[in-house]
Image (cartoon, rainbow, N blue to C red; front, top):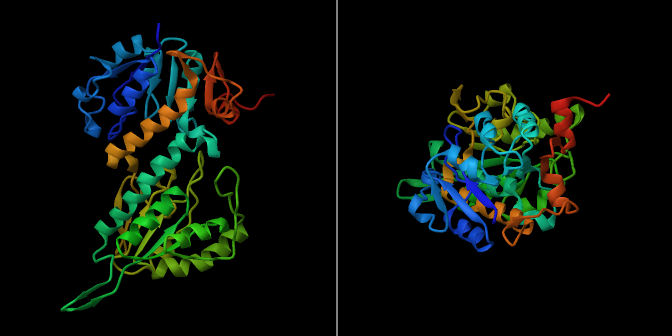
Length: 377
């Protein structure tokens, strides 16, 4: 009997993405997989039920969980959803173990075979599966539009009968996928853009997009494509240079995040208070508490005439393409594990092994196991 892949409707408030779009559902069907989709699952992303012609529609999440062998989700399942899964069910999604350790414990107790898509190693072979990169690209693009929408002036230079309008000065802090996409989008909108990252190796990428790289003399090359945490002395040196650029900017977009940890505070309150009236800060690190000391996650505030916005779940705001990219990540990740309609993971594959969160009643990811169960005595 072929494996049954279930696509439930997302339950988190405000989440508009869907784990599988119709075209990818067709690709799974061609692999011999029977696809089940809960009615309305794609509505938030403008994928109507009728578009899922390769899938079987089910009326409720409970019905879907009772039938499915493999569940794909965007957000982590809530406790009620986990309780509806059969022992041995395979689950793939962005599971956020650091935020929801109790749910991981429940997955363990329920003997759910789970894969956290954010744990996929950032190696060349796995780029097509990298949900962090695909969703960060969406967030970076949207951040530049958010900034342009909130700024009380144009981004590009304009020559008009009333005189010449100077372009906006935009500073993007963090030159990962989100930051580079924000830089590229701000440049397309005509702004003068500066980019900064503690990883000096990103200079070439920033400059290739037509932006100026801010060199603070601090480098923090880390492993796995992330920056390491800075020492106190390095932070002071970094801030001394960055503060001047922040104060002179019309728009600052921050994207510096450390997975599973609080976001580093890069913009101090006193620096915000020296910025131009009407300046805008878009803090994409709000999910981790924010890169700015005055950021209030999920809210837009005005702090001494500076607009500070800490949006949450930005990719959901571009749900059509965010869902499409995420679904393709899932397809590329799961396809090698599906043979003749059956689920057959290769545990010697580093991508499979490192993304595996729970299996056979155990938490396989060591940092998560330590978080949930404590250090071994």
